[in-house]
Amino acid sequence: MSEIEINGRILKLSNLEKIFWPSDGYTKHDLLRFYIDISPYLLPYLAGRPINFQRFPDGIEGKRFYQKNVPSFAPSWIQTFPIPSEERVIHYILVDNLETLVYVINLACLEIHPWHSRTKSIKYPDYGIVDLDPQEGVEFAAVIQVANAVKEVLDSVGLKGYPKTSGATGLQIYIPLRSRYTYEQVRDIIGYICTLVHKKEPVLTTMERMVKKRGATIYLDYLQNLWGKTINAPYTVRPVPGASVSTPLSWDEVYEGKVRPGDFSIKNIMERLKEKGDLFTPVLTDGQLATTILKAIKK
Image (cartoon, rainbow, N blue to C red):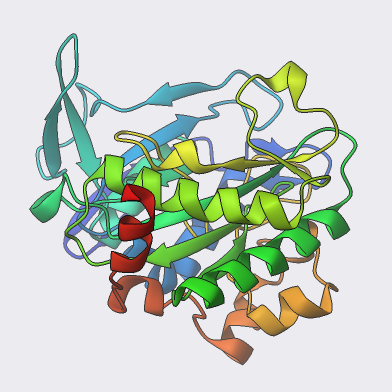
């Protein structure tokens, strides 16, 4: 058992030498070091948002389970936010500072999924997300092609979007919005955009909800914008070989089509950030109106 002091808090760290990525040799210590290094970039995308976690106590090849409610053994300084569910009130952890981030990573929380809305306006998301989810057998080049179709659609409706790799197989395009639309409205806004994308790329894409009917296509998952749905935050590491990191891209990089999800990992992401900075900053600052789309939906 080791200890670390952060902002006056003493945190106990356990099993630091445990291998979390067997094929790469990365340990829990490597994971903690990565999150401490990346925290200035990551924390703004977590602050003020309830968080869903997926824990991997024995590494990416071991058992995994979801954690929403704050553990009963959590220290008293961990801040939470209550949200009623059908069965109970869930007290979500708020990762607003480095000490809380290190605490949850020590619990082997590899998957970090913030809500689309903040506690101060919990019913009104700050962004909508076009989630490009390639089904089995689909090359990443096709994902890039569809992402460019998303850009064309966004340009046509007067909205800006910001792409990032999922860190696994797909891409996600975030569309910052004013915090005035309900989750249902945001779902409809993104659904409308996805419908236009599907018209542009009818062979490559699908909006079919049943997995077995999708075939070798890219699923345009607009339903990820519903209440309680979450997506892994930018700059989070994924539980896949190579320890890839969900990484914001420029549209030039998407257009050129030379990037792959595995290009960015805990090994090289800091070098990229030093070179390019945080390409995702507008997602948190440039909320947009979607009046045109909502009027089109009502027609």
